[in-house]
Length: 258
Image (cartoon, rainbow, N blue to C red; front, side, top):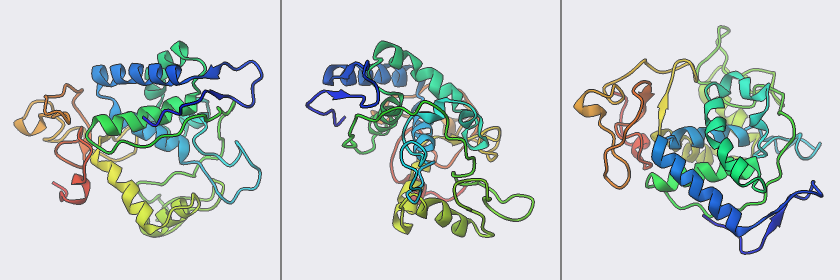
């Protein structure tokens, strides 16, 4: 979990409680319980990524205007941005954690939920650092996250974010999105591997079938296993990139579209 050995305090609030190791461990335990009940790990990874994915390394206006993992996604209009469709449910699932451990920031809770989801799904244990301070309003520019498809004009992305991400090719668009955050090509490829985990839905990302043989909840191919080998319960629907989409591994890079 990467819990620090010394207490942390929210620097921008004189009345803020000290964030202790015990509170972080308690929050982690609650998140584990939520994951066990819901198998919402892929949703938590998407929430954490979209909260962080607004970051622009070249803005000189400072925190929180340069975006990043600061919990701002919980506010409208950011939560209602097109790229964030469906994430209000993830925020609601984690609200009880914040209520139980108010000294732990939303920003830390969102990132903790993602890291724990990956670890519990068989992925690596991430050496997390905690102590993020929450933004108190939304990150309003819409367009800093990548587009899944080209628009009617044939372009991916647009000019509405902190920098233009418009490009006629998907790879050019992705580079404009991720170079803005400080990624290189290797980092972009590595991050894309997270698609091994979870499903796409038409009403969220704009892509995905209503269901497939891996997600219909009826066929033999749709049986999902957790990292420990036990059978997983899930709500049918959506399109996965892999056949075992509740396990975090490198299957995304190995399995062809089916």
